[in-house]
Image (tube, rainbow, N blue to C red; front, side, top):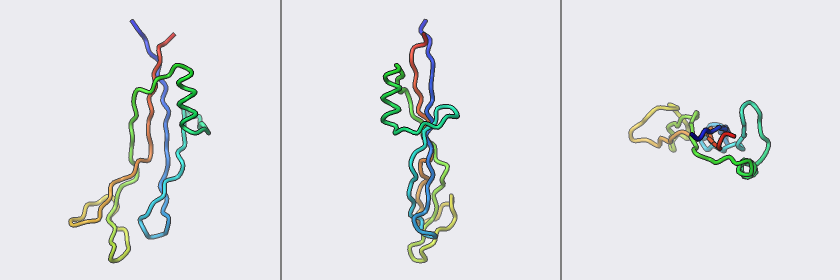
Length: 107
């Protein structure tokens, strides 16, 4: 029977306002971790290295820790983060983290 080993790359970023009080957000650069260790490389390089080591990407799961909100164009304000308004200018949350799962045959 074939046995597998798994490796998880955890990627995270935060969203920062471009202008105070206006809900236009800019994502920071992704941070990549394997276990507790931060990997200071571009994801393309990480993928190439893992591929050379025999790891195969088998799944990606995304998560949003940043809730949407209601933006009033008339008042230029953000209210009710995470709430629903009808009619609205609601927007969904942003992806703040991803879990990339790799596997390879166990030797």
